Image (cartoon, rainbow, N blue to C red; front, side):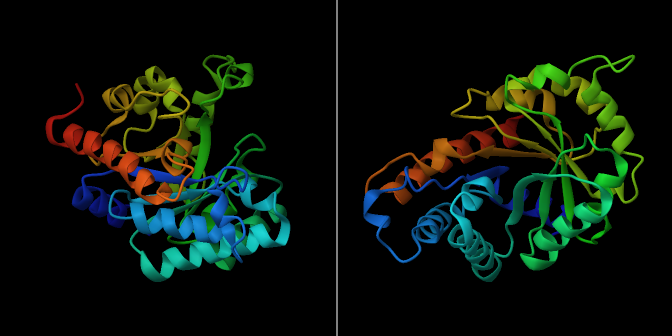
Length: 274
């Protein structure tokens, strides 16, 4: 999916919501656990209930890899289902890959050719030759980890290197990579105040913002610092939406939580952040 198509969907739906599919068999409703493919059954119900309210879905691959071949098959079915029934949604493989060039190329083939994701999250700390293989696929996007939402982000990402914080060096250097126009970036909602400086370096790029909801990030604060002329944000919520209920009404409850965020987003897009 091109960024132009993504922007068009955001404008049409008045939403820049991304729903994180962090599907955990220990947390899904008990009645689903005995089904033939409980992970896919849960995902399908969540997608069918929320698709009109969001523009993107982000499966975190760890939650599928943890269940071996059955989990991986459920991930493949989920992406195929989105491609067949909701092809206008932007898909993100939250895999956080990144390795030497030939290995990165295989990761890129797996997620872009094998499963046809629109994008993948990539760790930048092995440098240019670990990122550029992902950028070699036309129409696909790399979402580079810049400043993450966890507390441990301060261990390395904000250290001076040598003149400014390391995450800012990552931003500046990555814009020189081949096909850098396909780059997006991860910035945690719990680091919203850092967005002002980030936008000075990458004013026009899309940012994937995890951490709104269960992790305590503020949508209003994110928008105050992060919105640009093209919106430029994908705000992710995972647990706060998909586990809104552990009962038979789980899909309806998820839709309710997604609608709450979508309505807040629509208000911000109409009037601007507060």
